[in-house]
Length: 418
Figure 1 (cartoon, one colour):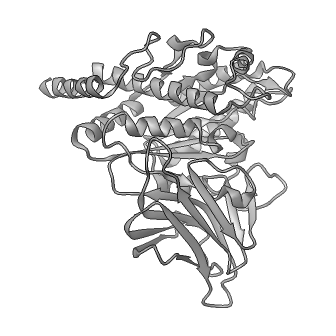
Figure 2 (figure 1 turned 180 degrees about the horizontal axis):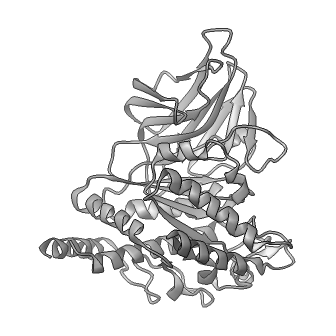
């Protein structure tokens, strides 16, 4: 009991002296956010239709990180275009990594999206040269191996290269001293070579899980990757993903999204499980459903079948991972009329959550329910398609999501027996 009192005192003192606003009028703890009368702030919470013990394990681990400054919590957030843009997931990452000192556990997953001719998150820049081919899990006519990111880029040009630079204009500055490169590992692959500014201390290859881990001789915020060939058999290189890691305690938040992705998109990724196992997350957030429900012939049974299949894939390799299902935002079909399928999808999500012991974040209910996207659009929070948000809207979504997570953690603190 003394430990619990000390922990509560420590948390309270931090919020009193470091946060200008503790509790907003809608109890959106701990950050004040803008008030809109169509948002259901009272519904901004995580709910657990089944057993919530997997989340309690994560919260106890978070206690250790905060109290002792030891340990790292890994989060993987999977979704479509909302997540590829990494504005709302990026906002959530920043909030989680700054709500208490020492919570920046690293940047996590990045990908050279520009090579695939698609939008890149604003938090890092990508430059490349040479001839490349790309493949995404939404391109049904292409046959290619894919992993957790749902994307790959391949070059047959030994002179090709790319560079990733993390930006420092956000709430958090990121550095890394390890690079986990997910790539095709066989005798035909080029040898990856980092720029001269990067000191490589050690290299570990894990062929079973499909990555090479590079231990670096310092902290960096950018790298350049090129290739070399030492035999005529080496004629290509395929990248499936990159994780930028460090040795710091805290939270690392991997944002993994593909524009237009649905459940079938990720279910066909043949290396999904082994790449996920390599990241070994404590929490997996599933934000799929917008594209599944973007149809006039939505089939709830098929949707549930796919949802459960993905959850089962995850639980097969990570049986104790905490899985959080998010309900998609209200949206319009073909820009003409509100999409009633979102309510049907929400019913499925609650069923799956109860059956598979997952948590639920019902953002559809939070944002105002059916046809609320028109109100968000009127307040300049969404773009014309009434599916996607603008920057201001995405930042609001991220703040709401963060506050919902912290509310659950706050409830854990009040009810925990230390």
